Image 1 (cartoon, rainbow, N blue to C red):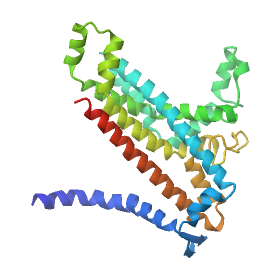
Image 2: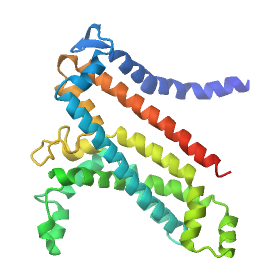
Image 3: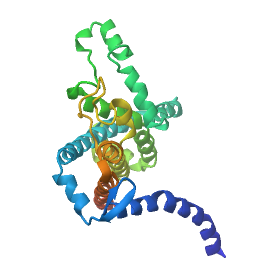
Image 4: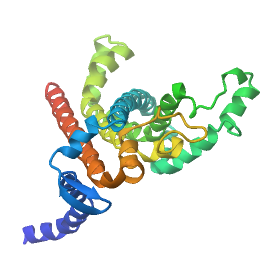
Amino acid sequence: MRWRTAIAFVLPALALYSVFIVYPLVSALADSFWTWEGTARTGFAGLDNFRSLFTQFPLNRQLRTAFWHTVIFFVGTMIVQNTFGLLIAVLLSERRFGKRFLQAAYALPYLIGALVVGYLWNLLLSPEFGPVNKAMSDVGLGSLTRAWLGDPSTALPVVILINAWHYIGFPILLFGAALAGLPQEYGDASRVDGANAWQRFRLITLPLLTPAIGLVSILTFISCFNAFELVYALSGTQGNQPTGPGGATDLLGLIFYRVAFQEGGENAIGQSSAIAALMFVLIFGVAVLANRYFRRREALLT
């Protein structure tokens, strides 16, 4: 009877997961092994679609550039997001008043869709009428104003900062919950031994936060390597809008979109499915390895 009740509760979620997650993954993997003319299969391609990603110019160069941009995007986001997220969480954990309000305020951007956030920041950073450049001019920093999203030297760093700002609420909440669950006796014992605040944080608090840091890092990696909406809203699919950065913000998600809907030609489905399959293998593989690494680090604490 218990098993029937459990299955009755699990089946709806399993059905939705299978339809919207498992089936698209399997379908994309299957489509990557065929050649296409529009939406019609024309023959079995084997690994030819995958081979073309690394040999067909200019797709091979764009894909390589997008991969390294995505790596930089992830590393930059993780450094900014985790560092400031942990700092804010530690400061909030020591507050008695206004803690809940500040946590909600920091988490608010995380609840807004990436497309909305991207379009809002596109307006804020507009070189013609954006309030950011206007505010800098008003305080005497007019020489530093620029088309932040149109300059190839600043486009990717600005996108990284916006992405970190958008998602910083998640690590703040997660780190805050982890800090609240730390045993108080460890800190009390370290104070008795004469450890200062920095030593207590570095030698006690930070190692005990390994599970939370690992979870945030893995989820940040998955999010960054799947990123599309935010960059699309900020610089378009090719970064060549009138104020675009000319490909400086190309990520793997943008390459997939362009091949599937703009530049893929007759075999767009085959090549874009191959890109999707490679992205899945990369994300899944790194996530599994990272999870094992953090589990081992966590086991050393016990």
